[in-house]
Length: 295
View 1 (tube, one colour):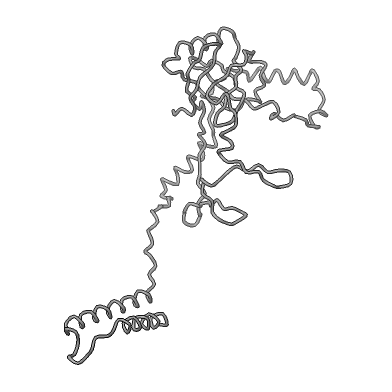
View 2: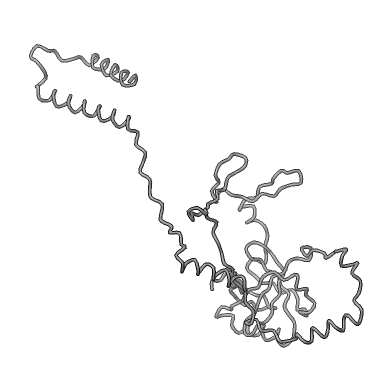
């Protein structure tokens, strides 16, 4: 596993240096979007709807949309200046009974691993929580987002579970539930009998994602049956050559080559011919350029 965060847990006057690891992983079967005809990957471009230009990641900022539709642009520099006192510190706020926490508020779980210098205070905090039967309520900032979280022991490891804020939990207000009324005692007794008949200890290894297993079987069957689209690296296209321009350049090069060889071999031309003046040479050169431009 790779640590996604390094910091410390403040436990009274003691700091416990720790590393944070994701405690869960997504094992779902992942797909790419491809062209059904040839299996080629479908790519998406980041295009600005205002100017139509493709935007590089380096030029992407965060936009906060106002009620009227206007946008306030926030850059990385703006966000870097925000005060996050818990950015490298797990701040212990209180020790509370775990049963007072609503599981709806739980968000994501992480493992905390101590650095070598923090092994003893780490073990002390873990064992003290175990003895007290409470969890530590903390504040922590992960990836520039501050969250409430709890610290609790799990076997020999301290687990940090982030939570959503209280104003992020929606109220469960449904008219259909309010109108349902109460079940009768006879109905509750029958339901309780069914619950008792199906009661057992929880063993997570007994349960699997049947959809994922079936999906992997479909993929493997296609591989076995040879239904695999070979993807080759795209060939580099040869540069497009302007044939007319290339031929004209070849003609000019040939003329210059022939002109140079004939002037060099004649020793300055026939005996009665006078060499051209510099002014004449300049005029002829200008005429040649105008002819070339016209052609």
